[in-house]
Length: 268
Image (cartoon, rainbow, N blue to C red; front, side):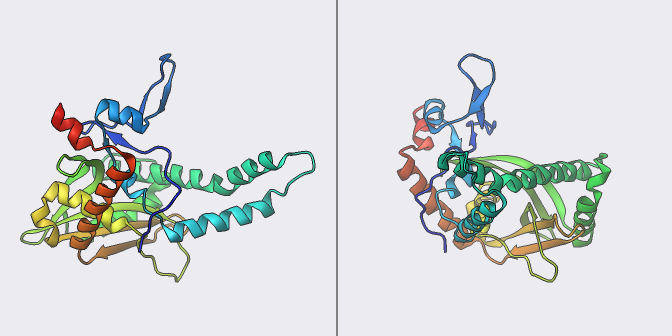
């Protein structure tokens, strides 16, 4: 179960009241862009993303992984006599999480290629090993996609975000999918991380409506980057409790941050 963490994220994703992404803003001199801060959000009446709200919850598995990466990085980047302790610590941090940036870049490319494939458009053929299995699964599943990359704003509960896929199935079934890239190991099962069901629940409640959350089929589609061709679909049996938990987390986020976008929008 997730618990609160003292390490709060420095910045997050933000959206305007119309769903426009506002993750970055122009610098004062107009020469570039900078990350949007909560001070900007309060001034502009922006909505925090679902992932930003979930960022106040600790993820024990992730924290343990980070500690392991830091420990391993000290072996790959031993301290030299010439460098200060502070410099070495920064170098170790860079070495520890360099792979995260690389994984994020690949994940972004795979996601973009999937979008093109869904539109029937050509994409980088080198990514076909990741994309084709997902497309094959989609055809076999029989689902009918009704929305993709949909920007959502929940004014009642004060958050926003972008959902990968909403779909229908059978006579009147409704659902939501979220694509995730993941490093996997042969023979080891793949499971959803903490809070991923809450993310899906927040999107589902906003799009399909709170009254319909109980019948939404929610699933994460995990695409392996270490076993090309492997795709694992992890279904969440019921997201009603996850939706209730997310609403409480959103309320806690507003309390911790001292900011309620609903009040700003209502005043406007």
